Image 1 (tube, one colour):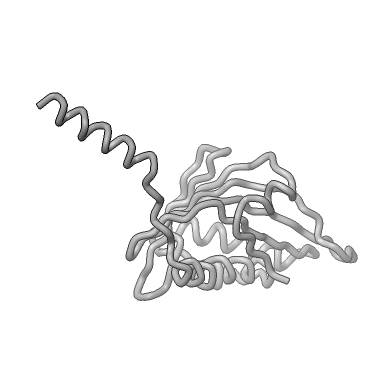
Image 2 (cartoon, rainbow, N blue to C red):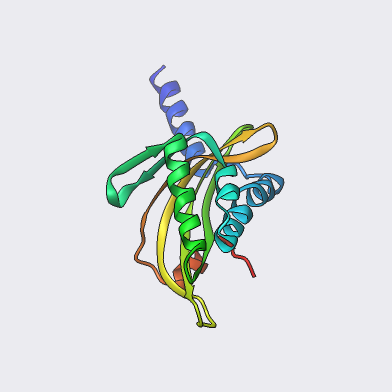
Length: 174
């Protein structure tokens, strides 16, 4: 009997070592990109607070790790929307890009990690200047066929453009 348990344990351990992770269907990756990341980047570019709010769930939880703060729901959405509106009233333009490092999904939920790059351009400048990078985690929920951000967490990241691009799928507007 001990030999049986030892063989079962050995089989389980070896199986765990060679097991392949579940592949995320490309269709799901594309849907998330089109429902979340492209509108997010467009909202920054166009300083469109309503578009930005529309890609979040009503009960969003936002964690800013560096500030040890959590905001939720309408309060967070109004604050974030106000930030975007204030940029629209200034002489600055902003841009954000994403590098997706990992994705895990099931039928109605997804979790992604990655880096973001924040850039801005002052009035009269021709080129955007990178202002910083961050590391993010998001939980996504599929609501009636549309992916939305239900949890967003980030912190500053000490990386450069090379590491940002090396990370994975890079999404940026042209």
